[in-house]
Image (cartoon, rainbow, N blue to C red; front, side, top):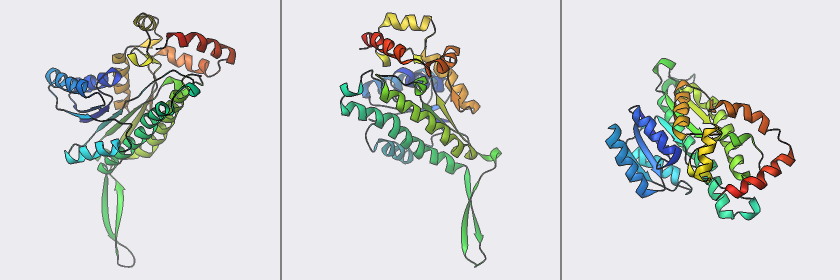
Length: 284
């Protein structure tokens, strides 16, 4: 199968690329880090012997998803696995954040996720339909579209990266958690639209992941992993890919996270304000 992974030059996206390549899947890797992207491509080919296409693309651009889709059509590349991983994070109060930075997050997390799911999801859906020509009662030809029997369907997979913060109301990450809530609900809704066509759609909602995304210092990152507040990205990816291929609709790795979500949803205001005052000093 052929997998397309956004944000694949570093962090979680790179782990997705390595995990899928280790399973023998060919890859299309996408990133706005051109030099790093080419280095990753060479490493994946050398280490796993799979075919890898690299596409340098800024996914916040209005036409990026369509251009990426057009590229795949021109190269006769049929995507079986879509990993919408590209994302950004910042910790800041809204009135202290530039509109440009806010719009970047909204474009990347919301618009790009929807566009990519729409374009590549339609391709996966069409592969599992067939058209029947009939003659109606007026003697005119009509075309009816049918879903192929399940045993004849070609499986398709879409993974969208949400976050445990989708269930949190938290100052400083108001845009981040809102966009992740959108991704989670959008993914669950799309699952029901696409599942009859042999396409599974998974929403991944991890807690903290041990990458540089959050701007924490290395001592704090090591402490978070040690006490299992944070999860190594390779562990997250293995669990997410396993859930995707099993047809799950949600993946939240870590028992601590499952326990934490109901608690976080009902935090008192005084505790949220206390946490914000002390957490901000650790953010870059």
